[in-house]
Image (cartoon, rainbow, N blue to C red; front, side):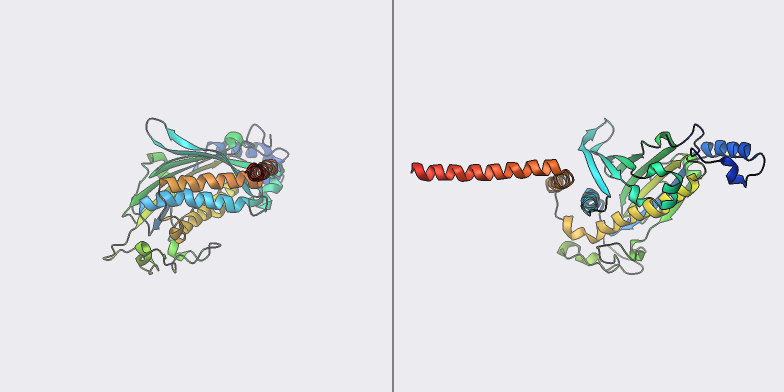
Length: 327
């Protein structure tokens, strides 16, 4: 492993963190013990959207699937492996379960990889239970084990601009530790490959009146256009002394907030692409995307598929020739 039993990076001399003063080791030990007992970081994101929850129910798997495919096919080394995508029913909730593996080392800053060289080439596993309007997603990094824990709880509500104080019924201890961040998609200046959210006007006739977004679009003064809010509570705990606070801050600001913002912006600006999808069309889109990824990222499978097509093609030709000769 890359960590010792106390959650410290192996090979890091704790004396250095206290300028080498006498007694630095014992103080470092006490600090690492205190850090291991602290509460997880809890951040609640609230994102109002000019959509109905029924539309966002389709948008979420559509956007995530499309982004996963585009990221994997870029050829940059970042890719997403979809291991499982199937219905689930645990007696309380039912919906769609997905299990993915993200190859994320390219997205980590160099200072983290310098401290923890083993993180170069690491992967992040995502297990998600989508029982819309409620969703739960858990992330694990096998390399770090219990030293890394991340969970995202989501709730999506119609006719809501983000003013519910506890949309996900968090217990009191998490509420005390919670930070609330509001994201107004109208203020988002740049998401690659999509128009500015405030300027976007849907082409489909049944949604054309929703754009562009005026400056006071959240005030809802006599406005009958659809609106909803995505509430997302992120619980994050990193136990890698002495860089755990920096890791948590990096993940929240540079990865999690950015990811949530991009998904929500694309859900709005890609509305024309999925608004007419029914459940069958969505399932077909996801299934075809997974198949395209399998063929693109697995050369042997791709070659096997090409041989099969050539065989079928030549076999068909042969049959036609036989029929002509027999006629």
